Each structure stands twice: as structure tokens, then as C-alpha cells.
Image (cartoon, rainbow, N blue to C red):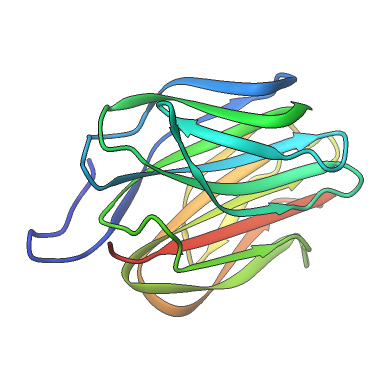
Amino acid sequence: MFGIAGANARVAAIALTDNEVDATNQTIYTFSAKSIGAASVNRRIIVCVIMADGDAGSTVDTVTVGGISATAIVQADGGSGNTRRSEIWLATVPTGTTADIVVTNNEAVLGVNIAVYRAIGCAATATDTQTDITATANAVSATLNIPVDGVSVGNVVWGSTGATRTTTWTNMTEDVDQSSGGALSQSTAIFTGLDAARLVTATASGALSEEALTLASFGVA
């Protein structure tokens, strides 16, 4: 269920609706019939994307939700001679309860994972975005400004040598921990409420070769 505050309150709400891993080698990834929750005129669909490739410089070019183009909110690449991308995209999708989510890259890559969120009552543009691509003691962190009654999302990709990594979040609540192996471990998390300067940390369960954290906050629409 997706709780919304009373009719006179202006409070944004967010909840995970779906997630998927695809470790095949493709340029265009179609995640079919993903749940996007109940329809609403002010529904934002936030897609947390991670992508890995053996080459440096691979990019996510477009994301669509039910044929509607999403906007890239924040992107980071923590690859070292390769690509390890963490990205957050947003589309306003007022109708439907499921949608095909299509991630198109500039070339064939090793894999893409997604986590899908339904947000209600939040702006379509971010209040703040932050990134970190340099781990300290297997952790990445950044301080995110979160507006009153707003919502925030975190997305992290871990690269490691042949080993899956799980994640512990500090100052956000974890929703997803999924992996297709050492090259492509993803975790996402959210926070709702007000914090003018919230230090968010994602800590991996073991040693890393690459990492990238993206954070975004959204105020009330």
C-alpha cells in the first residue's frame, strides 16, 4: 500500500514497487510489465539504474517508462578502466499500474539492474543531488539536503572481484539488495522527512574494486 497524507497536508510519499536484474550483454534492456503502483495525476516514477561494462566510457543514454521519457536526475561512474554507473531517473506517469521500463545505452554492456519507486506529491526536479565514487573502508557517503515533508532516494553500485556485495545503509532505509555477481551489485534506500544536512552512508559487505553512490532529494510539489 502507498500511504498519502490527509487532503489538507502537503507531504510527499514514496515506496518501492518493483526491481529486476539483467546480466545479459545488450545495448537496450527492456524490463517488461514492471509494477508502478496505483495511477495518479501527480505520480512520479523514479528508476534507480546501475550499469556495468568492461570498457570505460559506457553511458546510459535514455530511460523510458511506459513510453514516457524519463529525465536523468543524477549520474555517477565509479569505474576504473571500466564502467560502473549509478543513476537516478524520473518520469511523470499519470496512468497505468504496470509499464515496460526501457534502458538504452550507447553500446552493448555487461548488465543493467533497476529498482522502481512510486512517488506522490513530490516535485519533478530535485532539491539536491550528491555523488561519491571513492570508498573509504568499503563505504561511500555524501551529505544530502532534504526539504520539509520531501522524499529522498539513494542508489549504489559495487564492483568487486567475483563476489557479491550486500549493503548497510546509515540514515536511509534499505529497500533493495540485488546482484548478478561481483561486477554488478546494487542497493537502494529511501528517507522521508526533513533534514537540512543528512549524512548518508552506504557500506559494502567486503572489499571493493569500484563503487558509485548517487543521492537525490525532492520537495513537495
